[in-house]
Image (cartoon, rainbow, N blue to C red):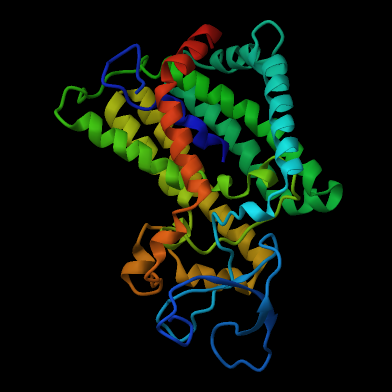
Length: 364
């Protein structure tokens, strides 16, 4: 989750120092409907079968029926990026805004600000281990990965002990400062390594890599599907998504991080970028394995069915016929969360000079 905030180093045309850088039974139906699951124990299919009645709340687990032309067109996962304005509470979003403001204030005072926070001392301590920016970069990513993935692995036990919301607060309270430190260090030292190649003057390379970076964020941010849970306004859940980007790849954050790393490494072309990419991709590869393991524990046979219908490699399940796209597949992306991703990504790109100046002023 948090490592994907490395949007602050996208591409700009200028070189250093500024890098702003089916149908169920009837083939006539192509719409998606939502139903509350009720298990039919007499079903003899290899997949679970369900009898249904209308679902009143999208926050509960549901089945989606889509225009997949196969014997069993019933999904047991959740409809990713579903967002219904009628079901939103103004009070929830007021709480979210207030929580976000408080978190950013505490983060700045207790961690980022060099006069009051601990991040400068933390970076200095890590930097004392090696004079190599590449090594320091890898150590920072490793520290983040250990705490982030380690706490994710302890989520079930932690939530049983202190509750879902309390565990989310502790998880974010540790992961977010470490992620910010890693991002700022990368921004400040991305051109301090050994230059391995220089392709920035190649015609069309900026446009191609900018587009690649832009696309990567549609994979990197599945957390926008449940922002209220991220802030613990709603009780956090371990979701089993099955539509939208999940049809393309079961691990969109891994794919997005690989695209982001390749694009930035090609653009920057030095040893620090290579080291950062190796660290980030390695962490996300472990995260994909660990994520599957945790989903299998939490959702059991339901996850095994979703796993058979999806793939880690983008489009692999579609190409080999395990995932058949409905005719209205594109509608799963015409939703507010994806619009939010587009706006935030473009906004971050144009705000690059501000973000870079803020990072440089920290002198980490």
